Amino acid sequence: MFTMIHENYNVRDLDRSLAFYREALGLHEVRRNEKPEFTIVFMADDTETFELELTWLKDRTTPYNLGDEEFHLAFRTDDMEAAHALHEKMGCICYENPAMGIYFIKDPDGYWLEIVPVGKYQIGRAHV
Image 1 (tube, rainbow, N blue to C red):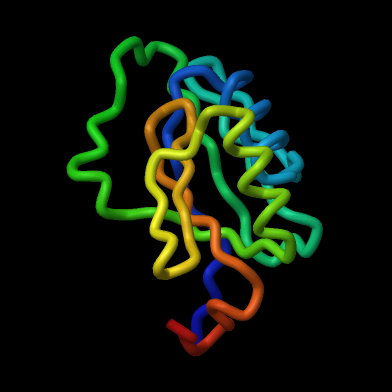
Image 2 (cartoon, helix red, strand yellow):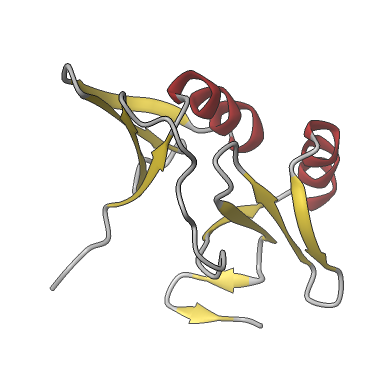
């Protein structure tokens, strides 16, 4: 049996990414691993059942190639209207699908994050 524990995103500006994930999604730092050549920061929501691992390779100067941006991490919200207003104010909404009742935001490195309302998806089964 396996349990998902984290997803990794490589970032170019750690402070900017930490600020984005705090403001946009309410994540907080759980722990970090500092080395001369890299820093890894684990972030989580209040449930701390799954973590986002942000890896900063300190000598990286060019953007990461994210391919066709066909992968994403999804976040559920119980207040879609307030979430949308926040993300609109932040200017990070990159795609909306009103017919499905979802939208996507983009982090400072270009990673897409799906925002879905409570009841849209449940752990273990989709309600699409």
